[in-house]
Image (tube, one colour):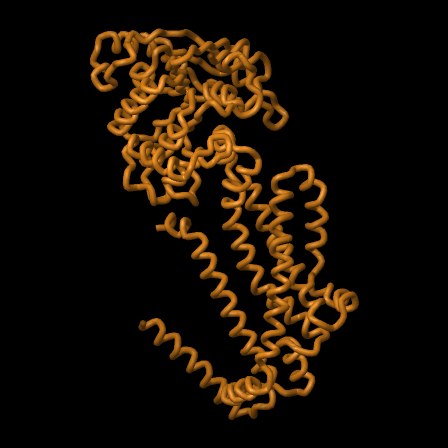
Length: 248
Length: 260
């Protein structure tokens, strides 16, 4: 309880300094918390929800493509040595291209709508999920698999009862790190070329030298990021109850 | 029932071939309890791995009920020093896992019943909903034992299964193991470096020496199947056999480890 009080107090102090600095040197570059708050309220009345929905749906659809594909190739390559020696170098090479640099290419391919941003989110999450799942599959204790094989389990049963559950924590931690990156990817895509979305708001306001607008959009992005991270952490903790128990 | 004829094993590590096991001949008949006794690193575990079908011999032939072992041998239950319980499954789900497999499918009700029986057998009733990480080392061992017994394999391969247990618990586990294997007419290959354990449990003891491992001698244990693990220790025949085995193993233990 006291910790919360301290945190609130600290936040108020920071906001107070910002407010004071804004009043002292003028708000044209650094704006003021009160102005930003007023702008957020105003934006909320004029279609902020639509921008948030755009960004969130880009993230959701991108993850819906990237996460299953990354997990699947991770398991496939992790379990098949030949495939891994063939394809893993290709994936490693592809991953070393800074994803942001692909944005112009994707926009040319997919146009101005949601598609290029979805592709960007899908790519980012694909690589994160692939590498996590792959490490998970290749570090499974062989004794666990042998134990089940001696009971007479076939390949499918070993996959279902050992490989998948053992890889689960890795997939979840991949997902957890993919979420903030997905937000980055979607925003970057929107900043390049878009008609809506939070990234578009930032560039639009910046283009008009409207600092209060830029800060308002950034604050909304921050809140979104925190909520997403929190959601991911809670989901992971719930899915991995058996590991929390182990930590006690 | 289990036959190893001229079986040897070499391992390739970093380009160097090391011989883990010189050619050995072992024959185990049905319902027999055979202990493989020897210092660590003498190839005892390698023998078990080959009978289980997890390792192929470099030379010689391993056969089980007359057919050569190729690939995992589904008729054996294997328990190693390390328990291989799945950490994300509760004790009950771990113990019952063999009964979920297609090759031994039973109805969920039957599975629950047999799991409860097995847990009762090893004294873990009431711990069915715990995760392995919540159990002590000894309890995990017992859960692993229950998991192996629940599907009633005809042969048990045990690799120092009770190595990490304290002395009292070890005796309890010995009694349980002996009772169960006799009751169900199981065949057992038991690897240990503990002389008393070998004498207390086995019908026959094969003394290994290393390295590379080979069989030094074979000893019949003069106690019947209805022995009491606890009192048998005080019999003169126990002490005599202990002495005999110790004399054989002593040079092994005192000899400096050969540097690779």
